[in-house]
Figure 1 (cartoon, rainbow, N blue to C red):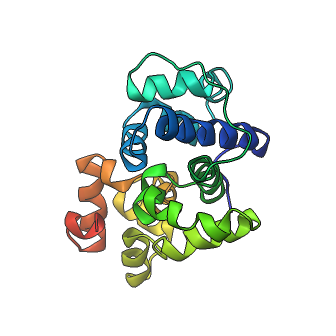
Figure 2 (cartoon, rainbow, N blue to C red):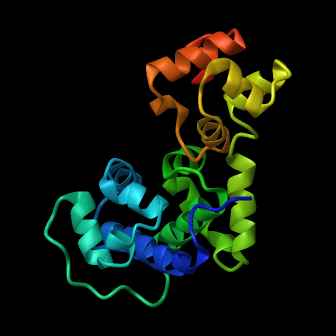
Length: 203
């Protein structure tokens, strides 16, 4: 499996995202799902998906929360006792790195409030159990892959017939790029080749 970025950046990404969730919920009094939604629509989200050092390494959790919430940064030391909210951010960052999927896909499968309900007993377990939890909620495979296989086409064949780059098709099928954000020309070419509708591809 290809992970999202070099593992050496993972501990920092986990600690920062964990601290962000804790600060936003416990100190800024923001609902955890609302904060997750604001995080998804912020530039911080993509920065964490790629371990962008400007954000992940160069800014504090207080600064990052301020950017997401569009508020003045707090000046609070993150707790050392790992609250449930801290744990949510911690396992979420690990799952994003592990599966190499957008946070939007992961949070659609397991919203933050649902993750909180699994704090006991998962926070006491090895993180591999949390990965299994995500895996059990994630779709087995994307619709594009299902339709491609049904047509007995390899990724390379689909690329050749549709004139869509192979790496783009791989990214859609792995979930590292959201097909819903594809250009209309790309969706049309794939749908025409697979003899389906664009709506079918976006299911």
